Image 1 (cartoon, rainbow, N blue to C red):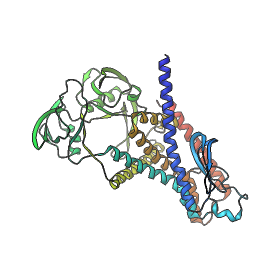
Image 2 (image 1 turned 90 degrees about the vertical axis):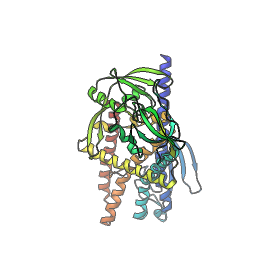
Image 3 (image 1 turned 30 degrees about the horizontal axis):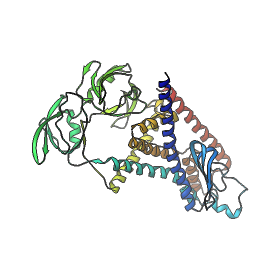
Length: 444
């Protein structure tokens, strides 16, 4: 009993630390975007705070800006000269007219627009850079179908592949590139092993190796049935409901047929051996290739990779940044389509998560390794950048909407209109926060 409590307490502490670190990175970069672009535009920052509430640490730089870390690590803010609050509401009548140009409210429209837009833009830049960094660190598969690391397989599985082998064909089917290898299971009958033709030391030979898509788990989704059951990457599913399987795709029909009822898995784990697991699939909304969504029962595992990793190469900085930018674009597009689908009723309410779910995902990602954790930081940074651009008053997008109105109408919105819209925006944001937290508790 005591051991269980210690384990749960340690897991909770790890989750909180991972969440706070991830959030601090994302918020710090977001607020720094506001700060530095505001400074470049001639707007003076009085306070740069990481966190809210009582100050824990504070210091003043040579420009007069107070940099501080506060006790509640759930956000941050930059307070510019003339701001009435951390949301940059203008404080009237208390700023020397000679310093008006250094306030956010007194700066030219272009300077205000650039300063406010900089927060989300810096989030997108952070996401692209982190994606690029992780890709550079982990590497990309070589153009040549070369075997890299050999992975451990269950006893009795014959794998005669060796690092450096170039894959030419499997069971007589030519394999010209990696996409062809991944698509081969669609036409190749499942079997424990096949004849693989490889080039080794300049000579073509035939070796015996496992099916190219064995039931080996390569990834476990946070907050999934698999994560709750403690399935791990590297586990191999030997049987589903007592029926042996030879390929990862054989999992899906069994999970779908269960339709939310427990699914019994027989699993082999490296260094441990065989064990039985019972998982309850969870229904989720997944995007389809046609642009819509479909409901599917999932246990939260990915796989279909062989008992080896491809040899990798290190991409150049331009290639890595291009991939990182595309990944950031995909996250933003996915967030947009998800919101539209939720509003139109195509997907359920449980697709909106709150702080509890994000914290749990951060803890799982950190436990899975630095690469997974920083990949999550990039995902969250891109998502938060997008959410901040929504045209909701109190968010950056709301300020930009007001500035756009001012540019078109040649005058700012009336104070009464801004006050009403800001109150509506605050109510909407708080409602969404409560909605997300409620889903964290109900949608499990």
